[in-house]
Image 1: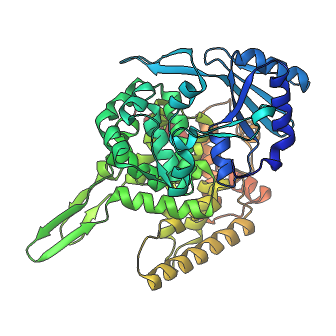
Image 2: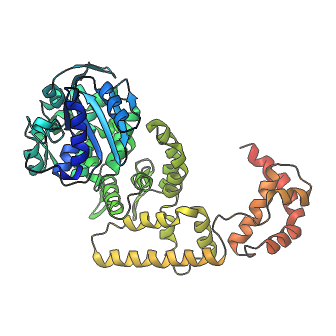
Image 3: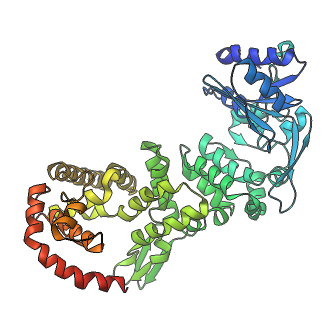
Length: 480
């Protein structure tokens, strides 16, 4: 191994010493070796133990006064030591039988362990034992593939992907994360085996998908999934975005950008300025309902009226199917629902009421909404792009000014529900919400300022009228 291990030498030599004292072969393997050669500073060290890895992990944990987190099912253990996360696994063989979700695992040699790994760049090992410390074991020329920036499997890709079909997604993720090129035989195997991804649990698929979405250029991974046919199994709604809508009437031609590639361009634009994973996910979702809503209007072209509202409504079922954390659902729904609203406010004649409503609807996600809108500028005309950016800056400033002036952060009626109940002699009911909403509407429309005294006076003035209206309005809604 040409490079020295001085950065982590104390830790690595200590691990080697512990192994030497027990006559155990120990190697640093996989992602840590890859990232080390790529000059990445990492403190997660994967170690392969020729022997009982779980027992060795317990010994290491005791040595460092730490505690091993054991994953019995996978025969792996994690030992946190200061800034380090040390993971231990035994040399093993691992394979999936046809249509099985669980791998068959058996003991093996170091070569077996490296052979079963996903890509050659992850199939390198470095000895940690004192007699051979720093020696590189690179059976499959992973270091060479790192230099060539290619992804290749240690074995025939059909065999490698059959052992664990999730590796097909991992290929897309590494291509996006590292900017590496997939060898033709890998893409061909992915095309032939795409349906095998269905035997993998949704949790593993989603975890891999989100890692890919967090890559510097997510489009590389998504295009790989689309071109190999995997995307239709993993995320059919995104797969259906692909296709160019084109109609010719006489000599006139109407076209709309391919929604799939447009979405990926927007996503890449956003990835340059934000690593917020859920903002990235919302960006991927922002035009998700366009295939459902597309209509051709003569003299105008393609229309996608209402796609933002339908796309927002879809998010709950998408989150449940993908088993995404539901606490992020309201944020994604909000951005999908509102992503076209700032564009409407570009007109100089727009009312303060419209500005207030967007400020309240966006709430804490306002800045993220405008980040998405700016990323959505994909015109190749520099002057036009600059004009759109300036317009968004003007709108954003207008919203911020109104938001601060009218105290709209965390907006709700200055007169709370309890006081409305007391003043109007009401029990908790939909009528209370009806009145509270009427006060909020008055503030948003600019009829009264967002102040307690003004809201209370407005309540006194209109309470009888609202109570009468509520008696008629609420029953009607309840029958819908």
